[in-house]
Image 1: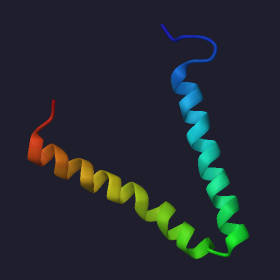
Image 2 (image 1 turned 180 degrees about the vertical axis):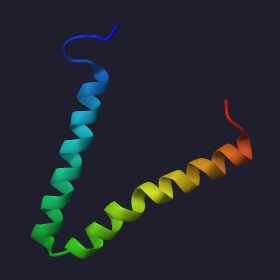
Image 3 (image 1 turned 180 degrees about the horizontal axis):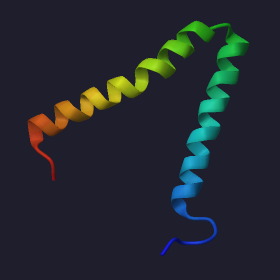
Length: 61
């Protein structure tokens, strides 16, 4: 059964989303939009690669 109302996960998700938006706004202010776009595109790939590496080294628990 799904919980109703505000949960820790919803708050955390909202904070991460707000952080991404604020980072985008900051990139526009500083004029570093191309670097920001590259980071936003490559970031998930790097995270998956490191996750696979760690799972390969230490095994899944």
